[in-house]
Image 1 (cartoon, rainbow, N blue to C red):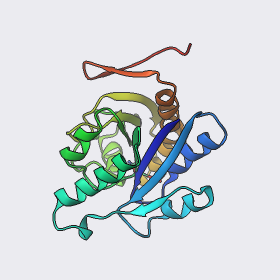
Image 2 (cartoon, helix red, strand yellow; image 1 turned 90 degrees about the horizontal axis):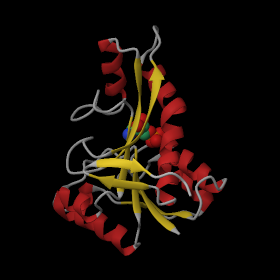
Image 3 (cartoon, rainbow, N blue to C red; image 1 turned 90 degrees about the vertical axis):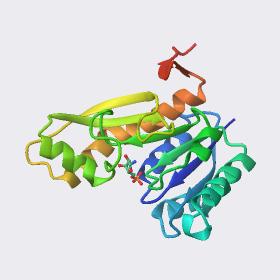
Image 4 (cartoon, protein in one colour; image 1 turned 180 degrees about the vertical axis):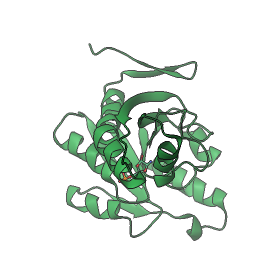
Length: 210
Ligand code: GRF
């Protein structure tokens, strides 16, 4: 059984997409053992109640230093013996003590085709605003492993999405979620649960199913 811990800050629509695929058994032998938010009122914590998933708020302001917070978060997931940590709209930057405790075991989704429109400052609507301002015709989403950099870890899956002429950042954000994020995030977790993702020289290789 793959044990997943999820980190969220907001609405949790990606979390919902993942739960749906676990519930309908597209993703097999997998359990979400905890969802941790840095915000007490994150709607993601509401969503999980009906699935009997443990929810918790662990926030930096409860600790004296960022390091204390990081170690508390790390130790919580270690105590739960998680095999994979999924960042689903998590807005806290994780320190290296955390990342190094789970090498190639933390996944994130970014709402663009990395390496475009990623890195420091590119989060939320800012990504889509940047895409529209540059006038690119194709954007998309990327699932990647998390390393010590910002959006620099090995790329697992990507999916393109068309940018349309009258798009606003909000309209484009919604299309990227519907057409790409909610599709490739559960898919990446399915591949991981099936033991089909390996990382070699900082690149992901996806093994065929047996
Ligand atoms: C998504 O756009 C995701 O790409 C980004 O944060 C947003 C989270 O949305 N990392 P939600 O909380 O899953 O609805």
